[in-house]
Image (cartoon, rainbow, N blue to C red; front, side, top):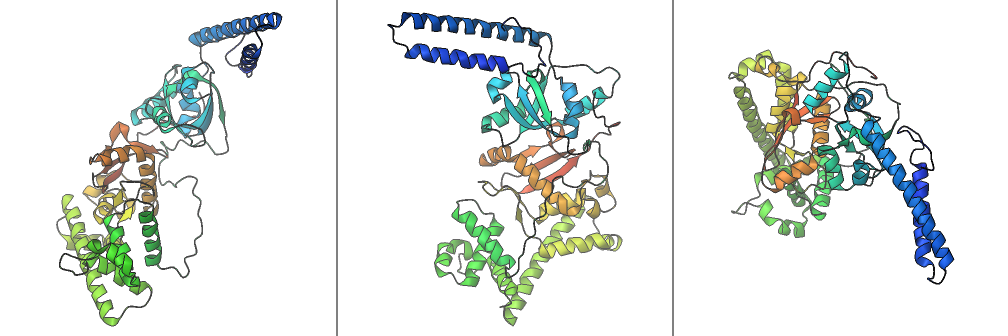
Length: 449
């Protein structure tokens, strides 16, 4: 352009091109507004337009020719410098590239890899001779950029050519850690603890408020939420609401469903307004629920070849006490985001299947110990599960809306903080299984090629 030669890594490569485009558009605008009688002005503007257009065309041809011969960023370099560390990167695409046409010139996010892709790239960057491949890379883009849902999906599923990248920007404020190769216990990154004062608020009141808000906003409640919602209506004697949800509160014979009665009595217990007779009734309901859950526990043990519960209790008293506590206090919990039409939830059977098989603290000896383990403590596993479901929200919603179950596993498993996870959700939204996929043993982590 203007007789200058350009290099792809020039920091101001497209500055002149942008300026010339502005001049060209301004000349075209002036020409459209110039009266036909002003021949000299028209001739002058037409000359400018021709000149600007020619210079722009020459520049674009030069850049396209240069990009056919070379590129700044290879797939291997991107993985070695940024991808293996799950860094957030800012990307500026070459102005004339296919990626810029699809996603705009600037986007940002984290590079994503399937399990075998990550393993293969790790081997390559530790080899003696590292190739430079102009290939496809995928990105989970930040919501800060003006991309629609289809563009986000395209970036995750198909990505863009590494050679389309013109410049990268990275904030190196955290140590470079290859989380995929990291052994031992992990913590969830970027955790912020927010203090919450629940003085004067009972669990029943808080649950009732949340369920009412979801119902008012038109979202789906799972059965446990309906039971608690209706139980609190009975406790507060909200007559209009009781009539509205009559079919969910009463059996065909006109009796209060025992699941609803359980939460009505729980609300009275929290408020310390329960009579002696009601307290005895609540104890029976709680005991029966606990017995049913312990039966589920026994079935889970049998599936792994443990048939004698007495021997299990004697050999693993700490695990049994933990399971017993959960059998008493566990509540079916929604795992998906607030505005989901088809909520994903964990029941007690889901809880046992996940934690007995894959939580180090709750894995008994024998067949359970052969299962892959989470690298998180017990309280953080459910947070990781919620993050996984949130990241897969669109795919899960699509499957459940068609009354189909959802599965992701193996090479297509979800990646988060250095681990890949297998996940199965039944068509009803009930979590069936969630487990880490065994990682390869990385030779070492490198910081650059």
